[in-house]
Length: 215
View (cartoon, rainbow, N blue to C red):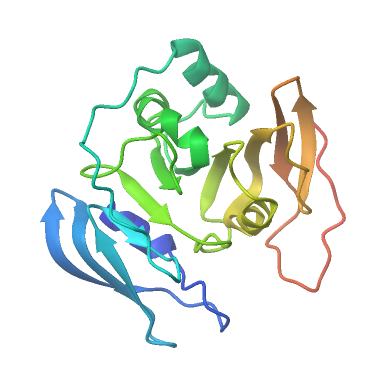
C-alpha cells in the first residue's frame, strides 16, 4: 500500500466521514507492507498484510498460491484503457476494479499515475502494489480519483459507491453489461465498454445532481 494513498482512504462504517490512522509494522520503500488502518470514531482497525488493506467484514483469506509474475498485457489494451480514461497527462490516482486490475501495472507505467487495485481478480498483489479488499463500498474520500476502470465481475452496488470518489469530469469505464450509475454522464460506448464522465460537483445526498456535461 503506497503510503501517500492513506490520505484518501476513509472508514466505510455508517458514521460521519473520517480519515484513517496508519500504524505501520513494516515498510517496503514507500509502501506499507504490514500494519493496520484505524478509525478514530468507531475504533475499527483494518489490517494491512502483504501490501493489501482489508476492509471486508469477514476478512479476506490470505493468498497462499505461489507468487507468479503478472501475465503480459497487450499494448493495444493498455492504450485503449489510457485513452478511454483520458490519461494524456501524468499524475493522479486511478482505481482498477475486479478483472480490470490485470491492466494495473502496465497502465501505471504507461500513464505515470498511481493505480489502486480494488478486489483484483487475476492480477498481481503484494510488494509495490496498492490493493484494497472491500465488500460493497469503496472506502475512499470524495473526489479522490482521477478515474476508474471496472471489470465485468464488479457488482452494481460497488459500482454505485465508486461514483462519489471520482472527481468532477473524471472518467469511469465499465463493461456494457453494467448499468450507468447515477451521477455519471455517458460519453460513448461500443460493443465492449461504455465511458462516462462524473457530473456536477461533490455528491452529497439528498441533494440531486441533474446537470450533465456534454463532450
